[in-house]
Amino acid sequence: MYYDGMSFSRKTMNEETKSLEKTLQREINLAKNIQSKLLNASTPTFEKGEVIGSSVPARLIGGDYYDFYPLVNGKIRIVIGDVMGKGIPAAMLMILTRGAFRTAAESKSSPGETLSSMNQALFTDLRTLKSFVTLFCADWDPESNELTYANAGHNMPLFINGETGEVSEIPKVSGIMVGGLKDQSYEEKSVRLKDKDSVFFYTDGIIEAQNNEGEQFKLDRLKEVLRDQYTNEIEEIEKGVLTSIESFTEGAPQKDDITMVVLKVSYEKSDITSLNSPVINV
Image (cartoon, rainbow, N blue to C red):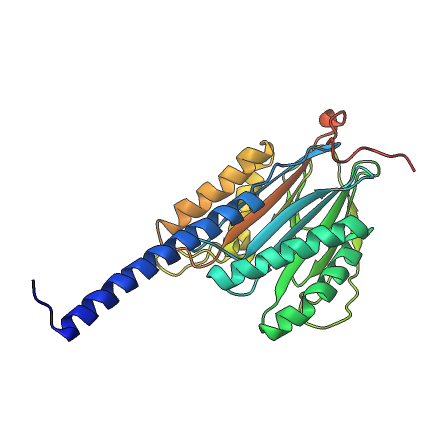
């Protein structure tokens, strides 16, 4: 078959474009798998409680982030965050955020110090990219039954009373988002948790999920779902929230990443500790 120069050139360009698209798709799928493995790493076990997390990206890959870090004193450090933006750029920043958290968690003694260290580590890169990250960091201490926490511009988690099912925000603590201002200190507060109490950490993709009429899921609806689920195990609480969002949105396109972490206190499990987080009496 005969091709003139222009026809041949167009055919070659089309083939190169298709090849490039396939390569790009493979790399995006690889990035998705990497992110999924990082977010779905093994969940630690620890004294007097259980924790679980999940994230549903709005695109193939997302910018939401959660993580757990067992500390050598028996505490478990929890973090949840939301990188400004979506897709590949947000996912790249999420990986940077994870690295900063892991490094800080190894050397810092409290949630506030962890957020300060992360802000120092990420500030220059985030300013260069004109981005920021909201983060909430908390330590569960089975020895004192206290949850100590600090906030960097994130949604306040919800407290679920294990006796009554009442749902409310934990006492508010303020702090500027990571990447907002340099050399930040983050205030800390603590709450004492009783047997069967739960704490629900989340990103705004949950309460801002929309149905086909543009109505948002909203905080009150989330509280109602958690109230209905309060006697359930953490896996059922997580599933109940996701099912309620799916039912509400009725197949409407997801506009933002949906991420949650559930911590539930259980004194009956007080004999279980992580091999990575031995209890040390000090």
